[in-house]
Image 1 (spheres, rainbow, N blue to C red):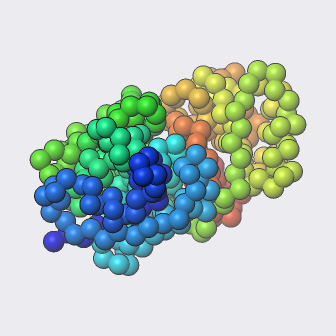
Image 2: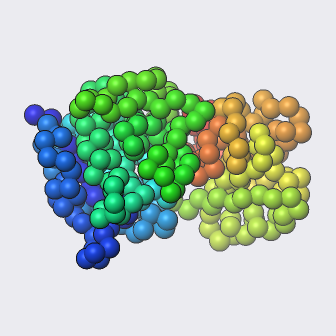
Length: 322
């Protein structure tokens, strides 16, 4: 029989109003419809902050536990219950750090938008589908995924599209990887290519700054003065940032502090310096393109890229392999 590890972090999927409380992992399993699972599930509770304030250290701890459960403890898959606010970030970090575990087992993250005792609570069904997905060989090699509303989404593509709907997550404009039906995963699309190998310990002190017209460059230099080892800028369009930041971006690059430019919009996964002059102007002063990643995921990627300890050149090469 397949064995799946459940790492339960509390949050909405485990909360109830009457009586007020937080269900353990074992309690969550009892809420799953009887007879819906044909795998052995071992539940472990993990202390974690509310998902809107999940620390990098907690995210990394979950990723490491998932990886070691497959590589060292012999589990066929891992399910992590997580609040929806930052679920996609933890999922992508788990994907970046999975390594050989991605080939040997499934790593599935899930959550809920309704409390456990709400009418038509979505948590039990999401958990049941996620356990099925984690044990299914159909997802071997796909890396970490998110399973919500019976849909399976690649960690790289998924985003929280509607925090009030049971269909909270979407991969648009990409397709969902698959769906859970009749006790198995039906594949709908090929997964994204695997990321570069993660080397060393990820750097947790990475800043994410939303840019806006007329912003003062002191906001960029201030986070570095406060200790940030790298910066992600959330630009507009295909990756535009205010011209007033360019000098500071150039200075930080010279100081070997990488600056990655992502966009608040969906963009193509091409290098920043391949965009037309004007659009890719930040690349001329040393900025690194996020290769189509959303800003929050670009921050996760920069954390991992900085783990090699190689500075701007190493980070640029690592992002080139995404």
